[in-house]
Image (cartoon, rainbow, N blue to C red):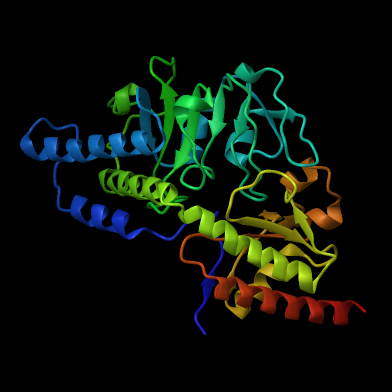
Length: 347
């Protein structure tokens, strides 16, 4: 039986629009910094993508700086600024910010000083959506962009991080979006590309794919595609709950992304579940992370006040357009059968 991909928050499958744009960009030979016709053709692809990303993200009048991904964008936005964040942020943000902001049991972050804070819009593990205060310095919109209505111009933040491969674009390209005129120190210096903010010859092929994916993602959102995704996610959770009432659904009481389910059965290690589900033909992620070969409980879930047993047993199921009711029903059946075997071994 065909495998079922249920790890869209890690990376979304490449959209056909992005693939087509990338293949077309491969035939453009010029360096986008060159002034001849071939160079201008490459530059035109980048500027088209910049317009596409800005339009899809509601960032008209803002600067879109292309990077190698949201991780580089986070470094560019956060490094050396003395920003604060909550411990539910992605590692790319906590690497540059002090994770001291309070986090509630529902995953909400309190930023008393928005101008000194970095706050994610939606969490990758739980799907919890933040109610952002006005004037946040940096917003990680990586998981939210393309899944829920969002516009940079009404986020009220100074800078935002986005990534192509979370919405069906290629891996290895993202962007930092900022209010025009924002003072920013380049971390990669050289030829002064990207308005002097990020030197290095632009990834023309990847950027073209990003632009096409962003445009298609905005169209899907407007067409209500993600409302249908939410219905499928809810069917999944209902099936799991009906078969295992002890299951904890993390973040279910809070506003969430329409595609994300974070579930835990204390005592059943998340990493074990991921491997068992992989063998059964399903790709999911664990709430725990590996570091230097050691498995630790999810930092995000611990920040929400969940104990070690719950945090270490969580898995994330994240879906997208094209994932069917049959797909999630098959997963629920396989997961429940594996849980029954786990209970028998533990008895």
